[in-house]
Length: 323
Image (cartoon, rainbow, N blue to C red; front, side, top):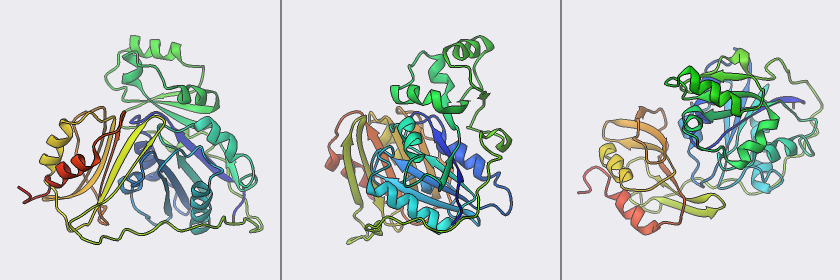
């Protein structure tokens, strides 16, 4: 296995555009290079990988769902990352922690055993929502702590900001390289640590042992697999529906309009094909075509615990022909 694999942590608050940035970077992967992406999600269903291109030639995806990726010494992370490295043998690794995670702690621990010598951690990219900063919303404490480890601040959603607002935001941030952008676009040439290269080495990495993630098995295709959990920062619930179940995207959108969620991510089999969407703070969904076909996935994050049975009943009623 390669050693000193260049490793890029893509951090930032919920909804800032981390997954979109990774998608842009993957589209710029040099021919002949193998890349791997490890994604953590606050919820337990695992949806970000479904929003990315799936295992294209030269790209391998892995997930650690259900919690804080900063628990890097925990078995789920050790096993998830170890398996991904074994599978992909990557020339470059990207890690996306949850927007509710602790990137500074993650960066420190990735430089320690058992990853020392296996990974070469580069200065991280911190994706920030420029519109939120312009509106005076404070940067969460865990993201403030990550500023000292950043090699680039990506100011996303900045297309409508005037120069005065940009200068005010710049004055609030440390003197680091800035890139103002929209849709989280970034030229690969500006990625910190781009010129770092993995080295050939002796394969002495010991893969942590543990249970593999169980495949989705539906006892009844009409009933979803549902997982929920409560952690610091919020309560999440997610569903995986059998691919035969078809949803009415308009009904799903109206249902979500009535809920007070912090974050929504969806990939669904709709009456007009497979579509995906993700949004923050009850904003309007922007449905996009999706290549995902394995199952329909819906993940919601709330500030407080909700009635899971009621939510599932209402979501089930959004299927085509349910009325």
